[in-house]
Structures are given as C-alpha cells and as structure tokens.
Length: 173
Image 1: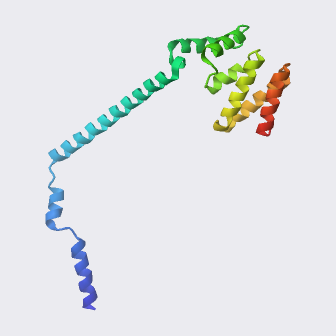
Image 2 (image 1 turned 135 degrees about the horizontal axis):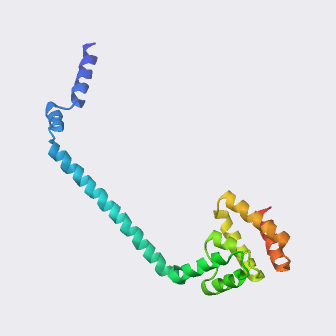
C-alpha cells in the first residue's frame, strides 16, 4: 500500500511549484504592475488608432472607386430626389438622377423610384430590387412584394405589369 502512496506523493510534489516560484510570483512590485498596465493601455490605444486609420483609409479608397457617387454633388442630387418624392416634379428628378448617376444601390432609394411615371425606369428598378431581394430581411422582402402587387393593381402600363407579374412569379407569390 505504501507504494501507491509514494507514487502519489512524488506526483504531488513534482506538480507543485517550488517556494522560489511562489515567491517570484508574489514578489512582483506594484511598479512593475503599473508599468505593465501602462504598456497594455498604450498598446490598446495604438490598436484603436490603427483601426480608426484603417477605417478612414478604406472609406477614402471606397470614395475613389465609387466615382461620381462619392461626390458632394451626388449627395445633393440624392437629397433633391428624396425631397421631390410625392410632387409633380418627382419623375423628372428621378430621370435626371438616373441619367447622371445610374440606378442607386440603396434599397430605400430604389423603392422610391417605383413611384416614377416612367415605365422604363420602373422596370429597371423592379429588376434591380428583385436581384437584391434575397439578401434583404424577410420584412423588407415582404414589403417589396407588397409594393409589386400594389404596382400591378394600380399601373396602366402593360410593360410595368409584365415586369411585376414576372417578379411575382419568380418569387412564388
């Protein structure tokens, strides 16, 4: 029986840290801890600054490759389009915007364009929205399909009706 006990004692003392190691762990002065804390804070701030610079750089690169859509003029044109919604000048403003900048990539702006009285523009917008729909949330998809259904009921254009029916058939709605 003592053999088993001796093996246990040997394992216990081998795994147990020596007094020297215990003292070394305790002996760390408060100054060393403060220095380490300051170093960690400095590293954290450097990482934050690095992340901020990276984000700024990526925004600038995106602007560079966005072309016209990253300009202040685009922002003004977009505001003008949004402000014209519900007025008689909306269709003309929408045509001008699309002519200058192309179809927007923004879901909400595309939904606005469905209100234009231009069948070519509405069909292009419907096709663009239907391509984007699978990536959107279920509520947004449901809203889009409801908008397509109402457009199908309200419009007098055969072309827009055909586009709407095609999208509803593809969606299975």
